[in-house]
View 1 (tube, one colour):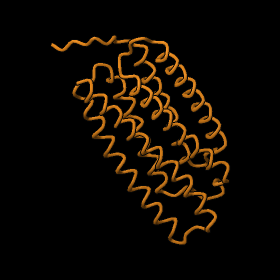
View 2 (spheres, helix red, strand yellow; view 1 turned 180 degrees about the horizontal axis):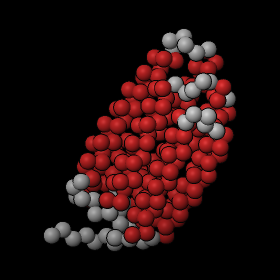
View 3 (cartoon, one colour; view 1 turned 90 degrees about the vertical axis):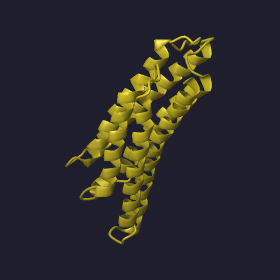
Length: 209
Protein backbone atom coordinates (compact mmCIF):
# COMPACT_ATOMS: atom_id res chain seq x y z
CA UNK A 1 0.00 0.00 0.00
CA UNK A 2 1.33 3.46 -0.96
CA UNK A 3 1.19 6.23 1.64
CA UNK A 4 1.43 9.96 1.04
CA UNK A 5 2.71 12.62 3.39
CA UNK A 6 0.79 15.27 1.48
CA UNK A 7 -2.69 16.30 2.66
CA UNK A 8 -5.62 15.42 0.42
CA UNK A 9 -7.28 18.84 0.65
CA UNK A 10 -10.51 18.52 -1.33
CA UNK A 11 -10.76 22.30 -1.73
CA UNK A 12 -7.88 22.34 -4.22
CA UNK A 13 -9.41 19.61 -6.33
CA UNK A 14 -12.79 21.35 -6.16
CA UNK A 15 -11.20 24.40 -7.80
CA UNK A 16 -10.01 22.31 -10.74
CA UNK A 17 -13.36 20.54 -11.04
CA UNK A 18 -15.18 23.88 -11.06
CA UNK A 19 -12.81 25.20 -13.72
CA UNK A 20 -13.49 22.14 -15.90
CA UNK A 21 -17.24 22.64 -15.51
CA UNK A 22 -16.81 26.32 -16.36
CA UNK A 23 -14.92 25.41 -19.52
CA UNK A 24 -17.60 22.94 -20.54
CA UNK A 25 -20.21 25.67 -20.05
CA UNK A 26 -18.18 28.11 -22.09
CA UNK A 27 -17.60 25.71 -24.98
CA UNK A 28 -21.30 24.85 -24.99
CA UNK A 29 -22.08 28.55 -25.47
CA UNK A 30 -19.39 28.82 -28.17
CA UNK A 31 -21.03 25.92 -30.05
CA UNK A 32 -24.13 28.08 -30.50
CA UNK A 33 -22.18 29.95 -33.18
CA UNK A 34 -23.15 27.09 -35.48
CA UNK A 35 -26.88 27.53 -34.84
CA UNK A 36 -29.13 28.99 -37.49
CA UNK A 37 -29.76 32.69 -36.76
CA UNK A 38 -27.23 32.65 -33.88
CA UNK A 39 -27.03 35.91 -31.92
CA UNK A 40 -23.27 36.53 -32.04
CA UNK A 41 -23.45 39.52 -29.70
CA UNK A 42 -25.24 37.63 -26.92
CA UNK A 43 -22.94 34.64 -27.33
CA UNK A 44 -19.93 36.93 -26.94
CA UNK A 45 -21.41 38.68 -23.90
CA UNK A 46 -22.26 35.40 -22.17
CA UNK A 47 -18.74 34.12 -22.75
CA UNK A 48 -17.27 37.29 -21.23
CA UNK A 49 -19.23 36.43 -18.06
CA UNK A 50 -17.99 32.83 -18.06
CA UNK A 51 -14.40 33.95 -18.61
CA UNK A 52 -14.74 36.47 -15.79
CA UNK A 53 -16.07 33.73 -13.47
CA UNK A 54 -13.06 31.60 -14.27
CA UNK A 55 -10.64 34.46 -13.64
CA UNK A 56 -12.12 34.83 -10.16
CA UNK A 57 -11.85 31.09 -9.62
CA UNK A 58 -8.20 31.15 -10.65
CA UNK A 59 -7.42 34.02 -8.29
CA UNK A 60 -9.06 32.17 -5.41
CA UNK A 61 -6.94 29.12 -6.14
CA UNK A 62 -3.74 31.16 -6.24
CA UNK A 63 -4.65 32.79 -2.93
CA UNK A 64 -5.27 29.40 -1.34
CA UNK A 65 -2.00 27.98 -2.68
CA UNK A 66 -0.11 31.00 -1.35
CA UNK A 67 -1.72 30.71 2.08
CA UNK A 68 -1.31 26.94 2.49
CA UNK A 69 1.85 25.57 4.08
CA UNK A 70 1.68 22.04 2.62
CA UNK A 71 -0.28 21.48 -0.60
CA UNK A 72 -1.55 18.15 -1.98
CA UNK A 73 0.31 18.73 -5.26
CA UNK A 74 3.47 20.56 -6.20
CA UNK A 75 2.76 24.31 -6.10
CA UNK A 76 4.31 24.91 -9.52
CA UNK A 77 2.13 22.20 -11.04
CA UNK A 78 -0.99 23.76 -9.55
CA UNK A 79 -0.04 27.18 -10.89
CA UNK A 80 0.60 25.71 -14.34
CA UNK A 81 -2.61 23.69 -14.36
CA UNK A 82 -4.74 26.63 -13.26
CA UNK A 83 -3.06 28.88 -15.82
CA UNK A 84 -3.57 26.46 -18.71
CA UNK A 85 -7.22 25.96 -17.77
CA UNK A 86 -7.66 29.73 -17.76
CA UNK A 87 -5.98 29.97 -21.18
CA UNK A 88 -8.67 27.76 -22.71
CA UNK A 89 -11.45 30.15 -21.77
CA UNK A 90 -9.39 33.18 -22.76
CA UNK A 91 -9.06 31.85 -26.31
CA UNK A 92 -12.69 30.71 -26.51
CA UNK A 93 -13.94 34.10 -25.34
CA UNK A 94 -11.61 35.87 -27.79
CA UNK A 95 -12.84 33.76 -30.72
CA UNK A 96 -16.51 34.52 -30.03
CA UNK A 97 -15.76 38.20 -29.45
CA UNK A 98 -13.95 38.48 -32.80
CA UNK A 99 -16.84 36.79 -34.61
CA UNK A 100 -19.12 39.49 -33.23
CA UNK A 101 -16.77 42.49 -33.58
CA UNK A 102 -15.81 41.60 -37.14
CA UNK A 103 -19.46 41.42 -38.20
CA UNK A 104 -19.20 37.85 -39.44
CA UNK A 105 -22.96 37.49 -38.98
CA UNK A 106 -23.14 38.99 -42.48
CA UNK A 107 -21.85 35.69 -43.85
CA UNK A 108 -24.48 33.08 -44.78
CA UNK A 109 -22.78 30.82 -42.23
CA UNK A 110 -19.41 30.26 -40.65
CA UNK A 111 -17.20 27.85 -42.64
CA UNK A 112 -17.95 24.18 -42.03
CA UNK A 113 -14.34 23.57 -41.05
CA UNK A 114 -14.59 26.21 -38.33
CA UNK A 115 -17.65 24.47 -36.93
CA UNK A 116 -15.58 21.27 -36.96
CA UNK A 117 -12.94 23.05 -34.87
CA UNK A 118 -15.65 23.96 -32.37
CA UNK A 119 -16.96 20.39 -32.37
CA UNK A 120 -13.48 19.18 -31.37
CA UNK A 121 -13.45 21.73 -28.54
CA UNK A 122 -16.80 20.40 -27.33
CA UNK A 123 -15.34 16.88 -27.19
CA UNK A 124 -12.24 18.12 -25.38
CA UNK A 125 -14.35 19.99 -22.83
CA UNK A 126 -16.48 16.92 -22.16
CA UNK A 127 -13.35 14.82 -21.73
CA UNK A 128 -11.86 17.35 -19.33
CA UNK A 129 -15.02 17.51 -17.21
CA UNK A 130 -15.10 13.70 -17.08
CA UNK A 131 -11.50 13.20 -15.98
CA UNK A 132 -10.72 16.24 -13.83
CA UNK A 133 -12.57 14.73 -10.80
CA UNK A 134 -10.17 11.76 -11.11
CA UNK A 135 -7.18 14.04 -10.55
CA UNK A 136 -7.39 13.32 -6.83
CA UNK A 137 -5.77 9.95 -6.34
CA UNK A 138 -4.40 9.86 -9.89
CA UNK A 139 -5.65 6.36 -10.67
CA UNK A 140 -4.39 4.52 -13.72
CA UNK A 141 -7.40 5.49 -15.84
CA UNK A 142 -5.99 9.05 -16.03
CA UNK A 143 -3.65 7.78 -18.76
CA UNK A 144 -6.66 7.57 -21.04
CA UNK A 145 -7.20 11.29 -20.57
CA UNK A 146 -3.97 12.54 -22.14
CA UNK A 147 -4.02 9.90 -24.86
CA UNK A 148 -7.54 10.88 -25.96
CA UNK A 149 -6.77 14.58 -25.54
CA UNK A 150 -3.82 14.19 -27.91
CA UNK A 151 -6.02 12.41 -30.45
CA UNK A 152 -8.61 15.18 -30.31
CA UNK A 153 -5.91 17.83 -30.67
CA UNK A 154 -4.81 16.10 -33.87
CA UNK A 155 -8.42 16.24 -35.11
CA UNK A 156 -8.43 19.95 -34.34
CA UNK A 157 -5.20 20.44 -36.28
CA UNK A 158 -6.70 18.73 -39.31
CA UNK A 159 -9.83 20.88 -39.18
CA UNK A 160 -7.64 24.00 -38.89
CA UNK A 161 -5.49 23.02 -41.88
CA UNK A 162 -8.56 22.27 -44.01
CA UNK A 163 -10.01 25.64 -43.04
CA UNK A 164 -6.82 27.36 -44.19
CA UNK A 165 -7.08 25.56 -47.52
CA UNK A 166 -10.62 26.87 -47.91
CA UNK A 167 -9.75 30.41 -46.82
CA UNK A 168 -6.92 30.63 -49.36
CA UNK A 169 -8.98 29.11 -52.19
CA UNK A 170 -10.41 32.45 -53.29
CA UNK A 171 -13.91 31.71 -52.02
CA UNK A 172 -13.90 34.70 -49.65
CA UNK A 173 -12.82 38.34 -50.09
CA UNK A 174 -9.34 39.07 -48.73
CA UNK A 175 -10.58 41.07 -45.72
CA UNK A 176 -13.02 38.29 -44.75
CA UNK A 177 -10.17 35.78 -45.01
CA UNK A 178 -8.13 37.83 -42.54
CA UNK A 179 -11.06 38.04 -40.09
CA UNK A 180 -11.85 34.32 -40.28
CA UNK A 181 -8.16 33.44 -39.93
CA UNK A 182 -7.93 35.37 -36.65
CA UNK A 183 -10.97 33.53 -35.28
CA UNK A 184 -9.55 30.20 -36.44
CA UNK A 185 -6.22 30.96 -34.76
CA UNK A 186 -7.98 31.54 -31.42
CA UNK A 187 -9.90 28.27 -31.77
CA UNK A 188 -6.67 26.45 -32.61
CA UNK A 189 -4.98 28.02 -29.58
CA UNK A 190 -7.87 26.82 -27.38
CA UNK A 191 -7.47 23.32 -28.78
CA UNK A 192 -3.72 23.43 -28.06
CA UNK A 193 -4.42 24.68 -24.52
CA UNK A 194 -6.49 21.58 -23.81
CA UNK A 195 -3.48 19.48 -24.76
CA UNK A 196 -1.27 21.66 -22.55
CA UNK A 197 -3.60 20.84 -19.64
CA UNK A 198 -3.22 17.14 -20.37
CA UNK A 199 0.58 17.54 -20.47
CA UNK A 200 0.54 19.08 -16.98
CA UNK A 201 -1.72 16.29 -15.71
CA UNK A 202 0.61 13.67 -17.20
CA UNK A 203 3.61 15.35 -15.57
CA UNK A 204 1.83 15.33 -12.20
CA UNK A 205 0.93 11.67 -12.66
CA UNK A 206 4.54 10.72 -13.38
CA UNK A 207 5.83 12.65 -10.37
CA UNK A 208 3.23 11.39 -7.95
CA UNK A 209 3.16 7.73 -9.07
